[in-house]
Image 1 (cartoon, rainbow, N blue to C red):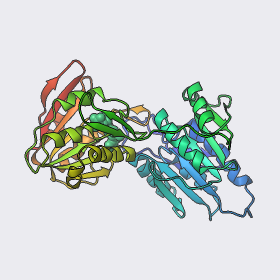
Image 2 (image 1 turned 180 degrees about the vertical axis):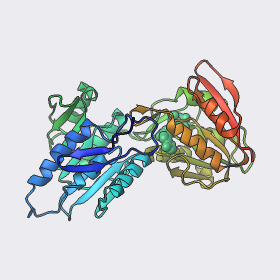
Image 3 (image 1 turned 30 degrees about the horizontal axis):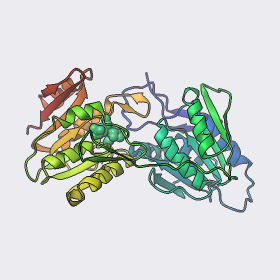
Image 4 (image 1 turned 135 degrees about the vertical axis):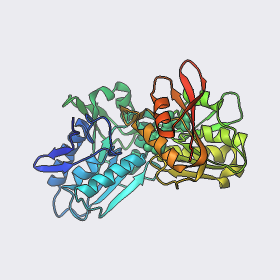
Length: 393
Ligand SMILES: C[S@@+](CC[C@H](N)C(=O)[O-])C[C@H]1O[C@@H](n2cnc3c(N)ncnc32)[C@H](O)[C@@H]1O
């Protein structure tokens, strides 16, 4: 099967790809029916806007997974418009840039924002693809309520199964009276009316919680993995982290809230730690976690938003530790983990080691054996294994 990359918007055709480009599952596309619904209304709005409107059009896009919304709306934006695109994911940013470039879409007046940046004031049009995580939804709704005005046109859509009573009630609480449309192509629009009198509930992000009965406090921004409790794989890994030598360079790949980094620093305060994640909120959480617990170690730590280890030099690290992801957006996949292992091999010095925790049923042992020439299982419990490979010359 060949992946469908041809996205039709009426007479306009766009060539859209997911990121990373070498997706093993060819049945996945870079857009879905909710993107199509959002773009249908957004294009109608842009076309209906008077050419002599007094202010240049300001458009805000939230959660554009692979750039379909940004590319699609750009085909009808007047030249002087400003386009603000908010993404938490480095992979989404890479996809959007790649797709804009390959469709020859100008980046003039494109503002790429991360999930932690303030939203622009009083946008005319907001294209909102609902996030699946409700903490992040609350965080974004609170920010939106501050940013929009009663005149802002909100276009919101998601898969019908994701528009629950709870989701609609969050829109009611944060924005104003809300209802869902009928189902179209298994998706629905959310129609919400800005209520100036409604004060949104106070949000408490980032969430802070204590690790078991320790003094350790974990700081979690709204979109970070395991933001409300310790992941069970991470719990097992905490008991099997390596003892690293003084002055080692250790990379926590896919650092999340920094729980593994923190434990490593506890065991070996004299190491150089690099915490990487593709989520801006994860990187900020890891940094805040170290700051909260060990502010004096901050100078020996780097916090980097990256796609795997793309920004790390070859042969530069003594250790890579990793609790790999098993999905991208809503698709279950092992290809990100495979890329992490390949990057780890490139970035490790000769003699350097990659140690991972993995769900027992995943095929990582075989992959590591193939890549490194060997792989040792160091520990196991009924659900997880701890695997280690050494980079030989
Ligand atoms: C299973 S979580 C582990 C988080 C944390 N280390 C822990 O043990 O709780 C996997 C992490 O990998 C990150 N991730 C996913 N794809 C990535 C990529 N391409 N590059 C870097 N990090 C990625 C996710 O954002 C997530 O924080």
